[in-house]
Image 1 (tube, rainbow, N blue to C red):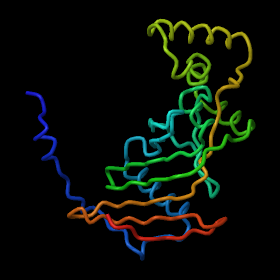
Image 2 (cartoon, helix red, strand yellow):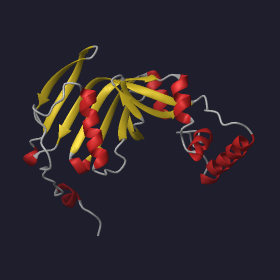
Image 3 (spheres, rainbow, N blue to C red):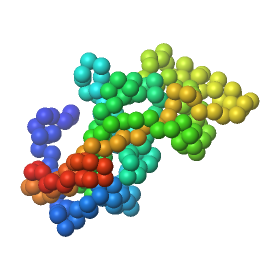
Image 4 (cartoon, rainbow, N blue to C red):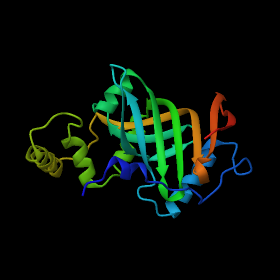
Length: 217
């Protein structure tokens, strides 16, 4: 029997695993994020560095997909992609983005709003050459977000680039590299019982100066 709307509406989890109050809040949001990410890693969450990134299409409609965080510092959050993909084209037109981390095992969520900027060629090269060989081939082979005929076309492109780079040194494709999201706000959300969740929002006032406020759930 298929799931009904009534079945879905009755799904509930009363979050009671952790608390997050003023005594827990670290003044620097990057340090706070580091603590929560570390706890997510040690809790064996599936892909703890997975994050949803939302961008805006040229017609003003939002769109989102999941990518992987590959680094962060007190400057921002870094991920890598095909610059010619839909997300790359959308970021070029409108660099305002939103990131969301969801760690269900810890009943936590982090939401980040900010501006996406390309990282340096040197940094993109360094990360690209640290990737597994197959992933490097895939970056060349996949015309990300474009329509293809079938799986066979994709596998043929992979085989062609695999042969090419068996005969010459591997290079990073010019259309592939990293973005850094420079945050303007970061929200930490901790699930609590009776939907009385804990939410703290960091707003960037000036360089390295964050205003912290508790939000109603």
